[in-house]
Structures are given as structure tokens and as C-alpha cells.
Figure (cartoon, rainbow, N blue to C red):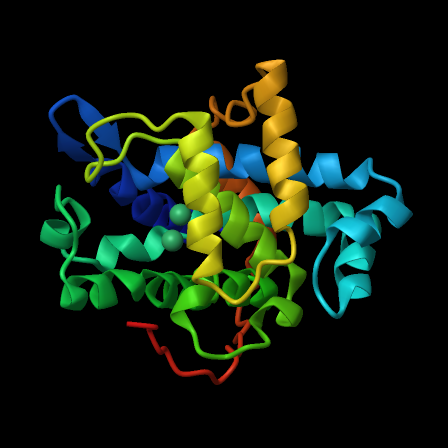
Length: 259
Ligand SMILES: [Fe+2]
Ligand SMILES: [Fe+2]
């Protein structure tokens, strides 16, 4: 193992844990969000994988439905692993956002929102510097598709829609500094749909709603799978997807917020 790379990743990742946002008794940090998100992602992927192809085809809404079904059904162990890794790193760019914006208890101004929405670009930039696989970088770059004007984002990489939908839902089920109470399941689902409607039409809306409703009814916690992982575990696993001297090329699309 390359110790210098390990140390660099460890130091960067640890700083997101130090950067805990707190207000009253509410504490949330990028680290716990990422662990919950990776758990939710894998539970959802497993749910999709056990579904017969003919049913899955009917539940995914996109003109290139085959692209998404093929991705799910032919998922390799490496792709499965990469989905977990991209969840862990997707918000790392928040370390470049001013604390005053990140920890603001109220609604963000238009200007602050624009700044905040750049975190996905900052994340991708950091991952590019570290030499992560290009599909991890590109997915992280686009993980908030509503901030981009490009209409074909979902068809670029199926991972983008998966990361978007699981990320929004995970955030809705967490305590947040700008929210003074926990949301009920019904409220979270309603907000998830409203949030996705601002985007470009996530292909998994229907099947994801079914998945979370089923798990909620069973009383099954979809956020617990990876909850005991340490930063060391995360870095060790992530290092499989770092290649020395790899120069990743990001798609040439300008950041364009919808505001
Ligand atoms: Fe994000
Ligand atoms: Fe996130």
C-alpha cells in the first residue's frame, strides 16, 4: 500500500469529521451522511437485483430503459464496490465551502445556494487530484443533476440517478441544521418527489418509492449496514480505485445552476 496516498486520503477524510456542524443537540457531518448513504445505496441495489428483468423494465422510466436494466443486471463486483466508494466521497468537496454557509441554520440566500451547489464540482476536483477512477469522479461531479442544464446527464452513467435518489432520501431522513424536527416517513417521501421534480426526471422514482415503503413497513433500517465502518476501512477500500498517474477527463459541461 502506498503510505503517502493513504495518509493524504486519511487526512482529507478525517477533516470532514472534524468539520461537524452542530446546533442545539443536532449534529450531522459529511462522514455519517456518507456511511448512511452507502448503506441505503447497497440495500436499494440489492432490491433491484432480485427483481425479474420484465418487472424492472416496467418500473424504470427513461427512453433508454435498457441501459439502466442492463447496468443493474450485469453489475460486476467492481461496479458494486465503486457505488459504495462514490457514496463515501461524494460530498468531500464540502470541506471547501465556507463554514458559515455549511452550518447556516436558516434558508440559504440565492448567492449562498449557488456557492453550496458547487460542492459536487469541488468533490470531483479533489477525487481527480487523488487519481480516482473516472466513472467515480464523473458520477460525483453530477450527483445533483438539477444544478446542470445538460439534459442527457442520466444517460451518461446509470450511477448518477442512483446516487441522486439515494442521496436526497438519506439527507431527508437525517437531522439537519436548517430543520428543527425529524420528518415523518410520509413527509420525507413527499419532499423526495418534490425535490426530484426539480431535476431532469430521475428514472428510478417509482421503484425507489416502492423500495422505501416496503422497508418502512417491515421496520427495516436501510441506513445501518455500514454504520460501524471507520475512516481506515474507508480509505483502504477506496485505494483500490486510485490509479497512479491516472488523469481523469471530466465531461466538458459548464456548471449552471437552475436559479
Ligand atoms: Fe451533495
Ligand atoms: Fe450528500
